[in-house]
Length: 246
Image (cartoon, rainbow, N blue to C red; front, side):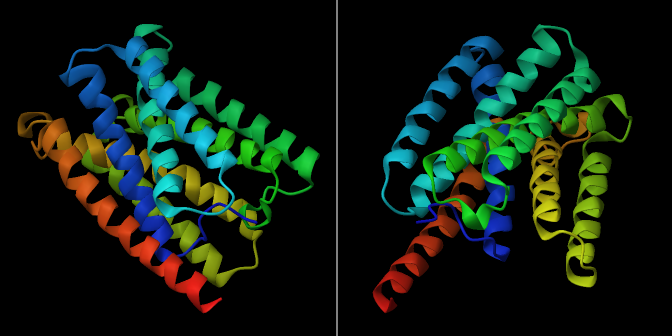
């Protein structure tokens, strides 16, 4: 049984909410609460392992559990990326290059092993492990790439978010107007939604004088958590109705 979410418009809305919340919540723990990138990464990676273990042993798809794993990959990815780029001094460009290489390696090994990287055919524990590993790399990459666009490129938070949004729009257009490989377009869109969440999260949290909207990490996290919870509840209700009808 495929235990991952079906790709619908609601999937992409929840993905953006979860990845943006991951950015703001990761910053809340590491910076606002002054826990630090290294300790925050250990804490959040531990939460990821716990939620992933429950996901793997589950016998069917549970929307709440699935999106909780997505959220923990996003929060852990935020602090791990910041640790690599800032504490270790790799910089956003080098960090992004390392992570995109890691993601491509995971996808390549997955394809060699399973003959496909389509999310609609994930029906074994091994395939699901590849799936979540790819997501962890993707969400960590998104923070580094988002920070690179917002800071090093000179685009700023709004400019970085606008650029990523435009690229997502292009991928969507290609999906509906061409016969390009759907699996490749899915993963391209999946990767792009993370730096969009990173730049949008920074736009929400940073003060007005720094080009942000000034909601702070706490206010932004609360808003995004409420939005995500609402969509997850809706998805859970739809899942129950589908199970009853089946």
